[in-house]
Image (cartoon, rainbow, N blue to C red; front, side, top):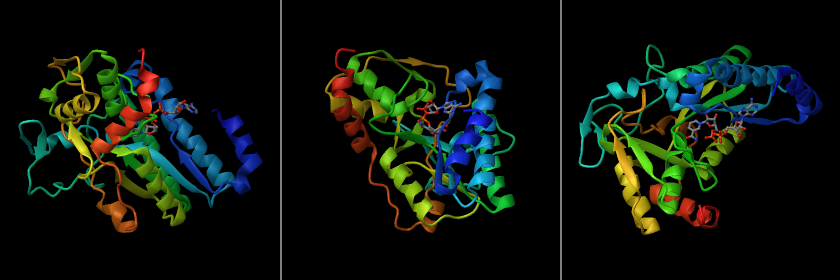
Length: 288
Ligand SMILES: NC(=O)c1ccc[n+]([C@@H]2O[C@H](COP(=O)([O-])OP(=O)(O)OC[C@H]3O[C@@H](n4cnc5c(N)ncnc54)[C@H](O)[C@@H]3O)[C@@H](O)[C@H]2O)c1
């Protein structure tokens, strides 16, 4: 949405707007590399448009931005990782053993063009909080998912994996021996975290948000779980080449958010998320 129509919308409703959840984005790394100007216009300028409309027309509103762990670029790949049978794991005594915290640097790292435009947006959201005293928060997501997630080959890990297992569509695992680890958070748990922030907002906050230690899996573990739930084998192949800058191990530390909002707790773990994606998409995927 361009500035003029956005400003009109905010002029119309400004005083009645108490919460903005900004989740609009160009979310694909590969697409961003093909069209960097469009990617930056959507992800960075689009965020600036929303922030400015909020500042001018409803500055007391709470502004939540769905940022991403890609703001840390490929820095997580420099962590000391140990190879296990089915997954990479961080050294058990490392300071990030319970998950990567918000103090990891976002500087001097390979972000991808998508990651760079999200960094620009993330920093703007923080700045509007700090400089203008607004209630802004960046929620730096790991993998966000749920039964309505439209998974595609390069975006939406669990949803797409389950879709391929259910439909027999071929699936390719890219690099890292299939042992790369992701934490996954169900949309219901994520929305409850937004709700906590909305009810008790703070200024210029940044939170890593994901499944943390409670809800994470490697690619190989996820394939096994999908096969068990669906009762059939996934038709998958392995490609040696990993995706550029792809994380080998990402588990979010939830300590900061839970310290600020102690009533919030994750409800969904990986098997529950996968079962729900399966149950709620049986009709949708049948015949595909
Ligand atoms: N899904 C994940 O694992 C994940 C992880 C971290 C962060 N995020 C972030 O969460 C948000 C939602 O991601 P998603 O996975 O649901 O992707 P999605 O593609 O399903 O959602 C993005 C939405 O943005 C809308 N959009 C795109 N350009 C727009 C524009 N110019 N104006 C208005 N709307 C526009 C699209 O129509 C789409 O509905 C994004 O900001 C994404 O970067 C997602």
